[in-house]
Length: 381
Image (cartoon, rainbow, N blue to C red; front, side):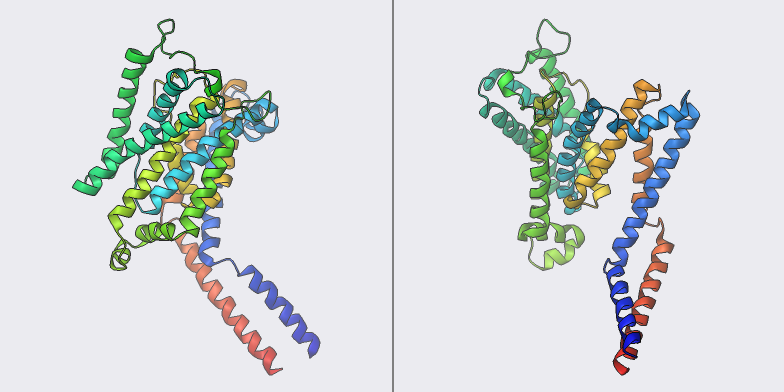
């Protein structure tokens, strides 16, 4: 009888450990895995249909980051803006604010950082990049403040106003580039950024720059803000249940404004870091796309900065594979956009695997009932 009791207790401990993860979390993990599998399946089919040598193309797509130091370096370069914009969007989305204005903040943040490195502080080794990044943050803050204040004061639709603001920023930036700051000896570039204003390279022989450290710090600070501070709790409460937050005495509109301004500042910093880390002149003539990457990252991470590094590595890995595949096997790099779009489509579908969730809830309840019955029998024995 004692042996039976010991065995039952051991099985119960294993069962409790397996059931320690909530049903909702397990379901989200399943949804993510299935969405990734479907996206990869679509990518593989498209590669097979379009590549002259599908096996070679798939090899590059799947394993390129490990085929050479330059490819691995490129993956790290891609990770930096993904983590920064993911943190920015996670903070804004925490309050349920679908602010899509990071594109403009990143663009003008990068331009102002370049201008700072050319004209304002080009020669101070540490102070120049710090000042330029802070200037980029201030520009991003100001850009996002315009649509955010329009929403706060006049109830303007934040999605429409931020989308329009992106193009205002683009055309203002192009005017400044071609009419004010362009180097007359070039077609669409500014003068060179001062060598002391650029971000230092962390690993010689690569382009992995100090922005990696800043991106990690921003992700950590975003997580601490949202999940370890009273302000973060208030921001998340506003996003989850604004009516309850209002009845609890929280300033819903003010907190939503604060979240958007913080996200805008991080967006401006992202543009500055990209410009100072990878370029010697400002030469962007289109929006960068990093703002939309931030939305994708926030969706993958479920607005939790803790998961942003994993999402960033995942996306950067396959983007690097697509980049290498495009010039090694002649397959369009836009393939990765299809891959990401399919995954986001399924992750955003609320009814995706909803039947599986119900089955998991019933199975979990049945497991707990059996555990209680087993525990009762053990006590009786």
